[in-house]
Amino acid sequence: EKEETYNQRVEEMQSKLQEMEIKCRTLQESRNELQLKYDSTSTDLQQVQEEKTTLVMTLKELKSKVSTVETEHAAELEELKASLEDREKRRLDDLVALQQDSNKEYERRLQALQEQLRLATDRHQMEMEQKEKDFQVKLT
Image 1 (tube, rainbow, N blue to C red):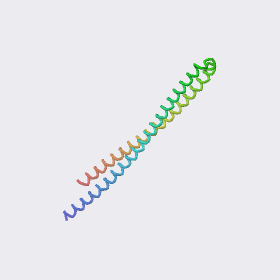
Image 2 (cartoon, helix red, strand yellow):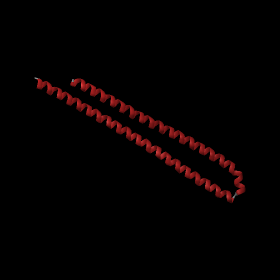
Image 3 (tube, helix red, strand yellow):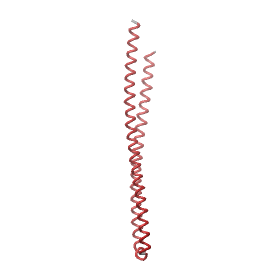
Image 4 (cartoon, rainbow, N blue to C red):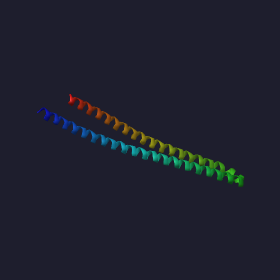
């Protein structure tokens, strides 16, 4: 009878261990999914930064062309220069505002993903601690 009771307890413990392993795998899969989302967000941010670099390079090229036109048509350029600078400033302001909005959105999404990961990890840790306590209680 003692052996039978012992065997039943061992089977119960093995069953609980299997359940905990399944939950652990599920949490690991969730973590992996969150990591993929994080990586995707990082890739998106990198692409936006590359686009910004391209835009900056394009702007530099445009300024170079303006300089060439200035030497060829100095008098005409002086009249148009103020207008062009105003447009460039507005364009740069728009680009900066757009970039800032985009960066804020990516940072917000990244923080949300990090928070989700932290919460999932904390919840997993609490579940594991509770399972361990329950397991210890059942052992005693």
